[in-house]
Amino acid sequence: MSRSVSGKSGKLNHAWRIFATGFVFVLFGLGALFISLTMFPLLRLSTWNTAVARRRIQRGMQGTFRLYMEIMRVLGILTYTVEGGERLREPGRLVVANHPTLIDVVLLVSLMPSVDCIVKRGLWRNPFLRWPVSWAGYIPNSDGEELIEGCAATLRRGHSLLVFPEGTRTVPGRPLRMQRGAAHIALAAEVEILPVTITCDPPTLFKGNPWYRVPARRFHMHVVVGAPVASRNFRHGDEPPARSARRLTQWLLAYYGAAPEDEGRAEDAQRSAQAWLAAPAHRRAG
Amino acid sequence: MSVTPKSREEILTYLRNVLVELFELKPEQIVPEANLYTDLDIDSIDAVDLILKLKDLTGRKIQPQTFKHVRTVGDVVDAIEALMANPAA
Image (cartoon, rainbow over all chains, first blue to last red; front, side):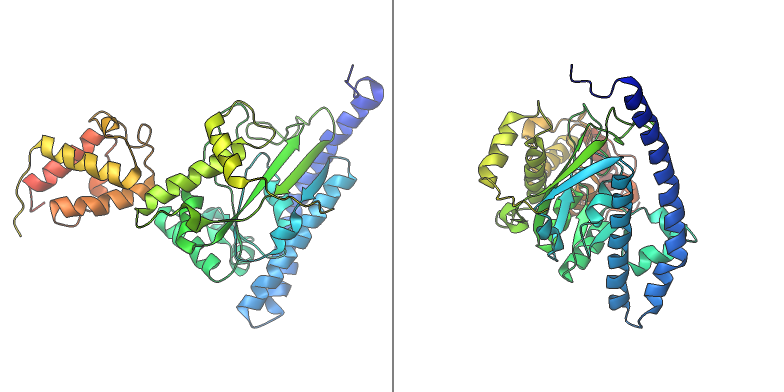
């Protein structure tokens, strides 16, 4: 039998991981409050130049999330590996990722020294978090056109932007769905798309799964950074942008459909993505 | 500029061509009962493009709130028909 976590030590380990996960949630909440009142204001005050402050704050965000990942690793909640991580440090791309877990943002930002994120616009009404998110240059999730223009503008300035085209965490067992906003952003800014695939084994912290229902064993997150793809490849002549956005979104769906942990998706789409990709060269990094 | 009132059938034909051209839909999908969001997969960004395009037909600016309660292709036809029958509104 492959059930390695039966017996007394398995139960103890399970109880420990429930406790540790709860502890980490509280720690993240308090940590966010603490650094919003200390590190971020200090970084903001460290220079007159808002662009320099923004870079330092994004760097601080990376450091914080890196620390969070290490805390979770040391506590025995998870392990993680990254392939092609050096690509995440190159600027000016639209980084798109699938969204299996609650901590995808923590993991990806921990790997990126400088990246813009789209965050809930409600945070701009939060007395503690509104300043850090604006100093970091993060983008509020407004509606349609305005959001796309804001995202394209930051990419045109040479920044990287992280987007989850699904718009929310994946619901296991349901067909993968994506909004077309990410495609519109990449096309409007005429930048490369960097596709990132995240897998989590065993699945946990997915949509609809409460945090205390920890998996049977310590979970492993694996990040594969694919080869960048130019968005202009998806624009055919003078066609309406809505068409290019549909084509690009279909491609993304196929790309993630072809990811190892997803079976039973449209095979045609998988084949077209595989043909397009011609085997991306993922290099091992760490 | 005067606007010639058009029949519902003509409006539907025009709308069908616009939807096929803009969003690569199949002509046979564009029936009055088709839901724009669920059946035709038109999102809020697409809706802005569509409204811009419909301006060419009605010859005047369309307020987004005109389309607030629009759900189906038939609703769009109704809205255009009302706009064209009632140029002062």
